[in-house]
Image (cartoon, rainbow, N blue to C red; front, side, top):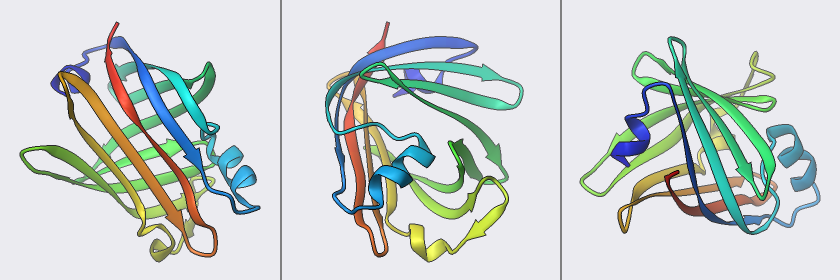
Length: 155
């Protein structure tokens, strides 16, 4: 985990992920707007680029792009992913770093009810010397939206 968060300018990590999208009829459209990956066991590549404004994460799940920009906002972390902007509260313990969505905007400017995103959870952890990640999203009316978990290591 330290290697990933110690990137100074640019570094690429590679690994594997298991992705499972939900089955609700709205999931494909919502996933497209958020640029989320398709279901499957896939290769993952993430290029981390750090600049004065924060970080850009250029992810590729099975070669398909999923780009986001992350930056610090007070005590929170913000991420712009597709048509959605998130604000996360971060919490750490001895084993992991947890991200909990606290605010969300559509198209970066339209606030959405925070209660819709109470079940947006992310976890980073060490996985046998590698960077492990888990993202699990449930939405009201939709139910399970997407879950992906896997590992990365420096290339």
